[in-house]
Amino acid sequence: MSRAFTPKVITANRLLEGDAVWLTEDDRWSPDMAQAELIDDEAHAQIRLLHAQGQPDVVVGPYLVDAKPGDDGPLPTHFREAFRTRGPSNYAHGKQAEV
Image 1 (cartoon, rainbow, N blue to C red):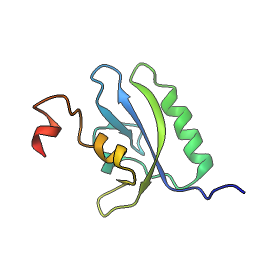
Image 2: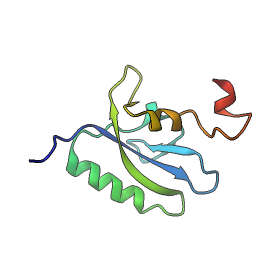
Image 3: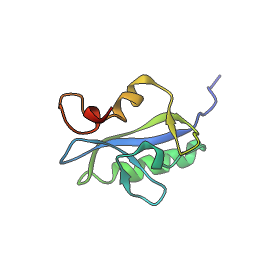
Image 4: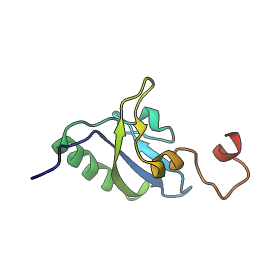
């Protein structure tokens, strides 16, 4: 028996900077997960993932991630993705330093 589809967002890493980014509904890559397109249909998620994979000059490693709706946009449901929203942890500056 197959599992029910849970809402997803598409994430990847920017090709040049390596920062985590999320695909928005208007086809931009945002460093803010709250701006990501929350996808609640499995077929649409696969189409959007193919679109993301077709941008190897912009991002690397796009994949679908479980997410849940939040007051200001999608929220991560797994600690790994929550960690990725905070940016690189190997620098003493940037997003990690702001937390």
